[in-house]
Image 1: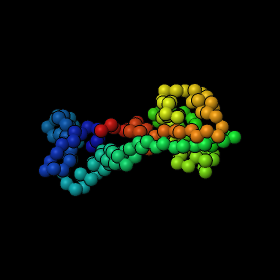
Image 2 (image 1 turned 180 degrees about the vertical axis):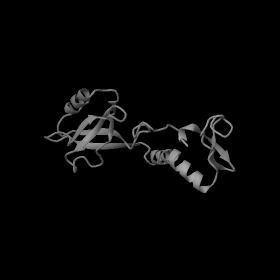
Image 3 (image 1 turned 90 degrees about the horizontal axis):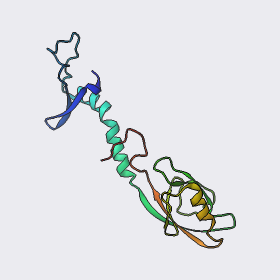
Image 4 (image 1 turned 90 degrees about the vertical axis):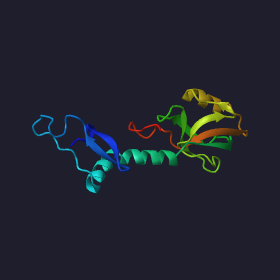
Length: 162
């Protein structure tokens, strides 16, 4: 029985499935599938297929809610010590690589840049942000606000927003 042809219902506080009209006995179709009986085996087989990914997705999205972190980096002779690239997950620029770990304490690869010296860089292009970072004088402290953690829609196309 195809999972796509079923509607979830609640029976005694347990989720199960009931055949949609036209699929049960008496529907006139030869060889029409019988309704799936309720029971531990049927429930686990159906729920394992239909709901397990949603439950895992919801749990993992709660566990990885975005976190905002402020990082202070002193600009050295060779720059700030990290590289940025387009973030395919949710737009903007992410930290692609941390080159100078001691200088970039608190910064992690995958962090998304939100602000540079309290100026929002959301919506800026890669080149605009590179230019902004490049204009920070050597020896000065650069304050970055970054977002760490997954956005709700960054895992897969099967993601649901709750």
